[in-house]
Length: 84
Image 1: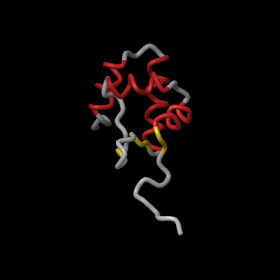
Image 2: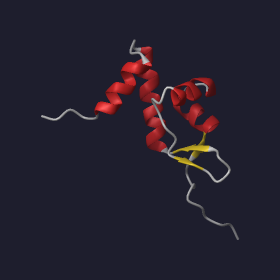
Image 3: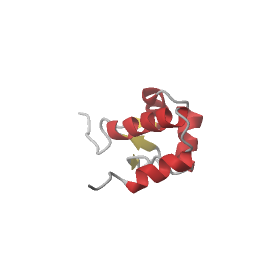
Image 4: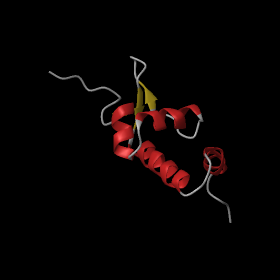
């Protein structure tokens, strides 16, 4: 009998990096710059990412490749959607 846990469907750091098209080193740097955050941290202290987090990692990669600094990207994400 398998036991279901709260982390089903989440990706470990290596798998999230692969899914987002970045290296593990890039993802670790994004984490250190607080541009992205893990969705959860397992009991074994592994950082875990859901689909939404992987989409955000992809967005960071694309914005950074487009010339935005990680500082600018962090500020954009912190500002949230514009209010009209």
